[in-house]
Image (cartoon, rainbow, N blue to C red; front, side, top):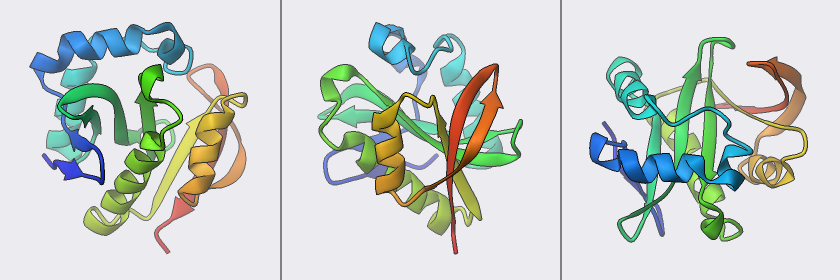
Length: 158
């Protein structure tokens, strides 16, 4: 399982000892608004993905403290890999999401050799759409994912 270091952050796979902090992060009302699925079982699901695919979302750590998650996630419904991020609101607006997303794209294209990486979000999540644009993703269409109407951005390795 890969550990990445960006200019300010450490991205490492979540482990069982992170469960309490991760549940608190996912349960924060401002995070849950954009990431509605419960945290229960997510760390194990990510660990399985690391074993099977060599990638999954990382925990995002700043000075050793869990401040979010982000990385690559295979989405079987689309048969493609998404780049995603979610940070505690105390860390919004500081460029961390862009830092995580860019490191994830680089890992996906250069290390894993993925051909396409996409991102989806709710249409009114303009902050995430701004991150998508900053990392070079382009708006393509609207799709339905797990009952939600979302906007789809993507970028190919080429």
